[in-house]
Length: 321
Image (cartoon, rainbow, N blue to C red; front, side, top):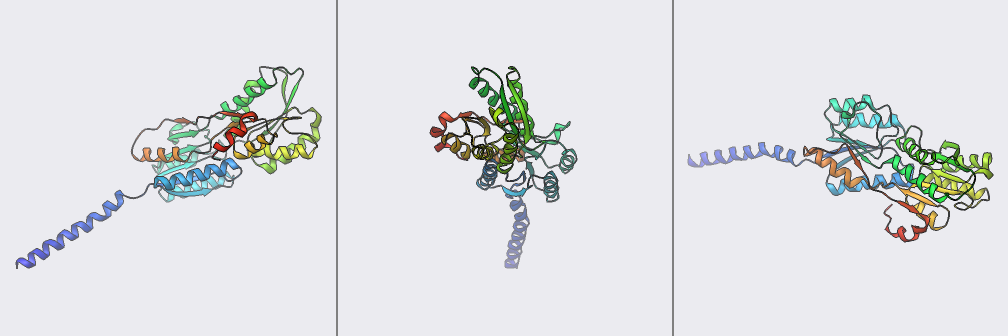
């Protein structure tokens, strides 16, 4: 009889332990992050994606990754898919600023916190996202403008500028234009004579620069490109037109990717304003803080600098992207 009771006690203990196991496993369950990326339109974006993927792996966070191929409808589908999968946190880098209210309200209704990375959204209700982390694009435009004003301070006569804008409606395109114009408007000699989107790609940057050169070749003094990839494409167009980039036409761009440093070292690009894509570790830290119930700042700004061609050779070995 004693043996039977002991066996029964052991069986009950084992059953109790079995009942507890799922709860323990649940407590150790990985945080799941759904991330929707803009696409792979540039060196910068590729480095950004790699930073997010490697940081998630290192942090032990399960990453559900979606490439929107530069289409807003693809991002909205991805976010809805993340909501249906009941991920813990959603993060995304929005293709354009507007048109997010409905899907963000759906995420809020599902009680899934949202983090914006690299680019912000235009919404009246900022409770629809927890935090926006990334660069100050307006300040990047200002840095580009200040560099140009200083460079051309002794030049007499008009300074004719052509501008390669980023994707129409995107936060960096809007803000980099705004910041640059804010600085150059103080001196009437600076004039933007042509401005068109190059969609942040090398191929489009080259194509649009070719059109600029055909229309105003001899009048162009400066090219301001909203990213390095467009500037590198434009450099090809300038060379094919028989001109010397960085000499006949002063070239300013933004991002400071390795390709820009190579162009500066080769004497073909005058300056690149830094915009760091390495947001992965910062994002994973934010995701963990959210899950731990910690409050995040509404705006987390990345610290960045500016690299003129004179320092490119020295700085190049330190570049991670």
